[in-house]
Image 1 (cartoon, rainbow, N blue to C red):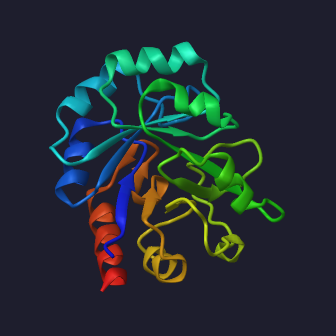
Image 2: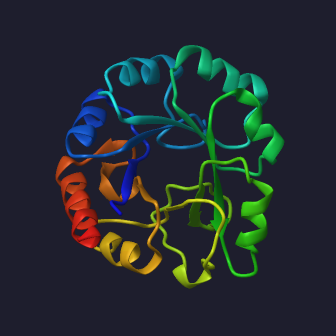
Length: 207
């Protein structure tokens, strides 16, 4: 199976197009004011319109109000929603757009039960738990905490970069990997060479 790749925290049209050219399957846009990768609706809409066909556009939210999500969807033609906070399953499912649910993994969290709670999700994005933050930390978590037999497709995130993504894929065998800070020159500014190196390592792990 070829592991899918999502490049998250896109803020520039050139970065989106280069990531797609290098083989990214999905591009993530952060609609969370506290994030250094936060993007305005208008700019996100401009970038999404320039995304090539067959590349999934993903909107990331953290504990948003209903109207906040609705306003983004009115302006930005997103393919998939990503909820990265403590949103309940019924909240995530109400927008008429498929969604994935992120969970910050730490010891003692029952991921099997968590996945059952979000059974309507298209996948479960596993990220590192860092107190006070919701992703984009560049921190990995203990992959041994991932149980076998999760009922949802696994999207592995948290501290991935060109140096460790191949080992992560061989160990976890996720449906997809998600990277943000691991392919950046600075927050929100992607480095094409790092993206290329990341994609190369993903492909090497799939052989």
